[in-house]
Amino acid sequence: MSIISKDIQKAIQLLTNEELVAIPTETVYGLAGNIFSEKAIKSIFSTKKRPFFNPLIVHIPSTDSLENIVTHIPEKAKLLAAAFWPGSMTLVLKKSKNIPDIITAGKDTVAVRVPNHPLTLELLRQLPFPLAAPSANPFGSISPTKPAHVENYFKNEIKMVLDGGFCANGIESTIIGFKNDEPIIYRLGALALEDIEAVVGNVSLINKKEVKPDAPGMLARHYAPKTTTFLVDDVTAEIKKHSGKKIGVLIFKDSLKDTAVKEIILSKNNSMQEAASNLYDAMHTLDSESLDVIIAERFPNNGLGKSINDRLQRATFK
Ligand code: AMP
Ligand code: MG
Image 1 (cartoon, rainbow, N blue to C red):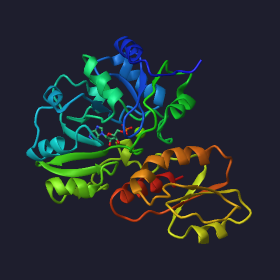
Image 2: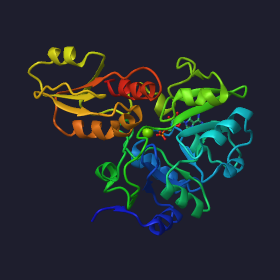
Image 3: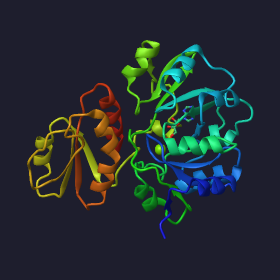
Image 4: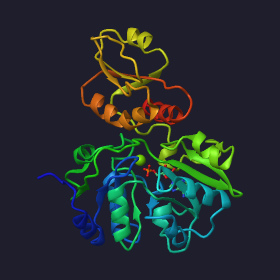
């Protein structure tokens, strides 16, 4: 029997019993558990095979709940929350004492977000506790953007995927931390840098050499298909280098009209938003086609194109 269901009461019951439920968000599906249940949180890590040094994002129903989670909210964090929550932005702030260390991997900061999906907002409003919810995929593999992706990964491990359809934004949230109350981007994501800067002025990207590779979104290889993947500007030239092989291509908008390759166009409408939404589903599809290589076209390096290139780059690492 399928584990995919729209029954929100069943989700509430499972989560209240310290079990896991995969939940829809506008970014990707999350593998959710009660942040105050050690049993649930340990099973998030074991189900995903995620190392304990990787902290989890706490999901709350509204900005009002933030004061129970963190001790200090910089002015620019308040502006960002007002502008973008509910939405695809995660803030990393000083944690309050009641947040368990297992959630934050022992750090004194906690990552928190108000997701923008009607079913999950309803779920969070009805639950008396926040949900920790990393992406619902085995550690390092492609994130899920529809219920069937989660079911394929975890049908034997979890009892329910709350069916909220296809994820509208399709890549993970943009993560913003603070240093001396000034915002720093920890991970590019579904909210474009330009939109953030329109609210708080220039923000810097974290200097990767400064931080230990202790957060999954920062690992070089992540979000990756099993098939060897290349990221290039000139797809046609790259195809020539792999002649004789079974090739899949991920193209932004214009068909190559090459019947010898398996092609997926991410947005015929030339929309980076649509391309982001389709990205992981396209990777899942190509990865299941027994191809020898996947060749991805590099996106324009602005707006969501930057975030898409970040994910494609990590998909190429072996
Ligand atoms: P995921 O939910 O699987 O997309 O990954 C969670 C992301 O949250 C990781 O990539 C981390 O970068 C980030 N994160 C969570 N907690 C913290 C924290 N306390 N400090 C820095 N980054 C964090
Ligand atoms: Mg993840």
